[in-house]
Amino acid sequence: MKKNFNTLEPGISQHNFIAFLWHAGFLAFAQNFMDIDTVIPAMLIEAGGNSVHVGIMSAILLGGSSFTQIIFAPYLSNQSHKKKFLLLGINSRILSLLGLGLILYFWKSNGSFPILWMIFLFITLFALGGAFANISYTDIIGKSIRTEARKSFFSAKQIINGTIVLLSVLAARQVLVSRPYPVNYAFMFFIGFAALFIASLGFWSIKETVPSRTRIAGIRHFMEVMKQELKANPRLKYFLGFINTQGIAISFLPFVILYAKEFYGTESSDTGFFLISKVLGSVAVSMLVFGFRKRVRYRYLLYSNVVLALVMPLLIMLPGGRPSFFPVFIVGGVVYAMYSIAMNGVLLEVSGNDNRALYAALPELATSFLRCFPLRVAGSSIRSDFMLFLVCLWGSFCYRSFSYLKFIVKSK
Image 1 (tube, rainbow, N blue to C red):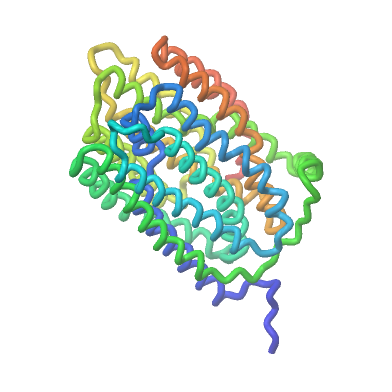
Image 2: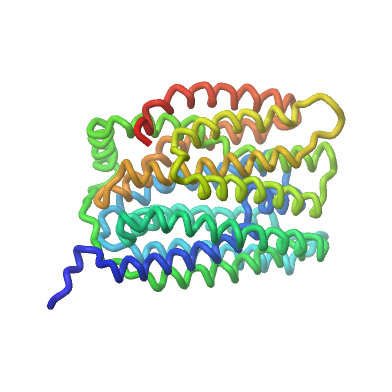
């Protein structure tokens, strides 16, 4: 009997289930060696970067990555199968990590080599590769794992991530303190490169059988389709309203790294400690969500995310001497994990197979300029009332976030 390649068979779904878990496991190991909240900003500061450079870096990794997804989405939505584009995106990230490792390993601090420009070049390639891969990943995972298996997949993914991340963060900290700068960061990126390369083998194994049927004729048509989607899906506009205000919360930790470095002289060993703190918070909340997955609803995660995002800058402003950065990074890890779990779940539920690639880019359209502008402002004002600025900024975002939440997941 001839197979129907427009449907997802249970055997293929199970194969893809394992392939995506393979990727998730090795990605979890790699993440701590290329963490954008601790490792990359600390490396940039050690290379001579200042507050403006950190602002630009965050704008590239967050705002720039988001904006380019808008450009990629119309083209990728027209592709019935997206596996090759997923591989192109992740291979770009793999090469960028190798490039960062090589320039840091061979760089001499007393030379004239433009190290900062090269770092920004590879950071940009890293961000663009992630933006290109993310749209394809969201589309493929939604149509390559059967609906009834998704809950098991995300639960298994959380267990694997929690176990591997805890092991890799200890290894990452050891690498940071094993050699002086810049060799320690070169080794970090070499290990991240190797782990991400192995993770990509899972994507090579994916069997993408269900085609996408959406067709977009350019950016203008993309905007028109998005307007239609907003009218047809009332929950979508509130979903966008929330991420338009709350999504910026994940950009706070890089500036804590800079604040700690400039005012308290933190070193590589401290960066490793910050990384461990963030991972502990992230893993703890992931395990709690998994343990109480039958009781926990998305709205509980979203409300908690807003409250804790406001708590982060307040912790640094507590009276006394040197702030205790441990709870800041613990809370930062919790905020990141809650936001990721809830947003990924809501996105899959409000979208379908034919429009999932568009929905993956739509949140980025809502947040791209917002992420760029405040980050550049924060980057240039870190020395003058830095924490007061952030508390006011975060407070206004959190206030608006609360007003959207009740409309997003009423039944979840």
